[in-house]
Image (cartoon, rainbow, N blue to C red; front, side, top):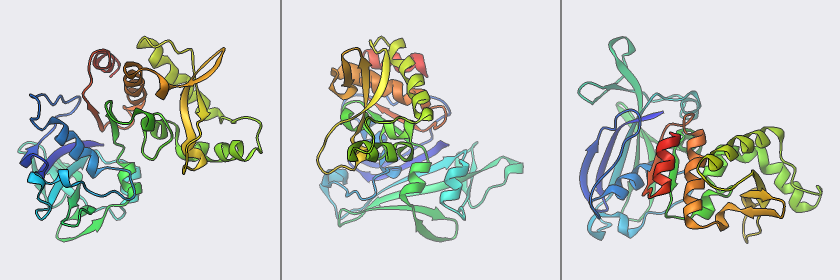
Length: 295
């Protein structure tokens, strides 16, 4: 899936913005406090996998929550999984030459089938996720539908620990799949298994993922999963990506910040070709060079 158009109104410092991303890699460049992060945060907010999330007062322009903010995404190249999650799919048409949304698709004349998604922050600081329909009222946009859109969000300055654990919507969850590891995690926590039993398909993914950090210069011989205790978490959410050595396992989240950033970038780029909507913030130094080489 690919983003055809981004529309932002009254979000943070942005009064009104329309952006038509091109295919491939798009770089958002600008001086400090020019709105770069706000644009990327806006995209991530529309497709957020979090089931319940409140808006922040700082998300509203001039801190005025009486003026709702809206963020709309036009998504093209729709996946079968996404279409199944929003069935019957309310399809619009996208005329790429003028960059205009039509009331319906016409593939024979080059009008692509697209979906129009929206998130609105209302005056009660509530976020309302919707899928808009041509000529009809909007429908709620479910969490499974947002996950099916396939966003990979890599913010190297925020909560790397969450991204390298089996948290909801994390990079690790997207790479390995929560359902694959749910039963093994429960068995290990309850003591019905001597050790954490990794399914064969997950082991193959870990082997493939381990190649990328090596290529990026991180001294990791093998990747593994470890159960890291944390209060209030389900067993599967305790799983964390770790580097295995002769002395045991070390969670990647305990590595230095630079290595954490590179691990997050390599984890995302390993799977990004299957889910091409990837948003990456502030890639500095080695992280930037790694992403450029791996994409």
